[in-house]
Length: 216
Image 1 (cartoon, rainbow, N blue to C red):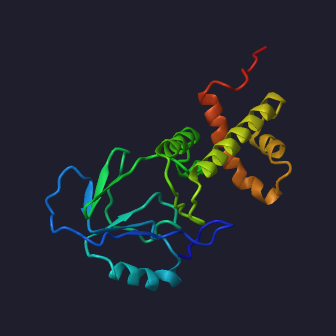
Image 2 (cartoon, helix red, strand yellow):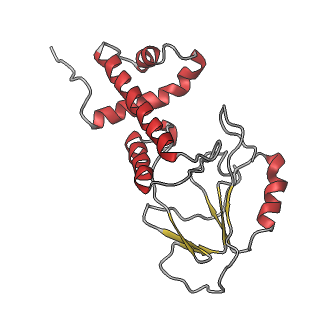
């Protein structure tokens, strides 16, 4: 659905899970939540609210809304209902299906909880699961997940190596690193790139890979 997401995307994929056969059983225990249907990330522009309302109206009343993160293209600004946070081990029951969720990070936004260590771990988790398809929240469904995930990891590792090399060659400020590593990239992308660089520098620091500061 049309959303206030960042370029090059214009939409956020609204995922709807609604089993045909829903047992009349409300006494299930051990789940963080139970419902008859589930939608993921219903954030959309106001002009699509009526379309979203019609989708929700066609679903069972016992509906669970799952939000991956708080960006406004994933959940509307006026979100004021109560919520239950997940830690990574919970299960949700939708009809007779048990859905497992894990907590991680695919967000490279330093201001919104992005974490490069979590990003790598989340990506490797997907690799271990070996899914047949991946539905991103933006863009097309991917039917070759391992190829895509390997590309993500290769890109991140390569970028981190370039950042470390820039620091070892004398880059001292965030701008120095960005100007060096993203020298062939349009400068309009440099500001968002600073978030990636900060996360990579933090990741390098956690691994104790940054050059030692010499004290004279």
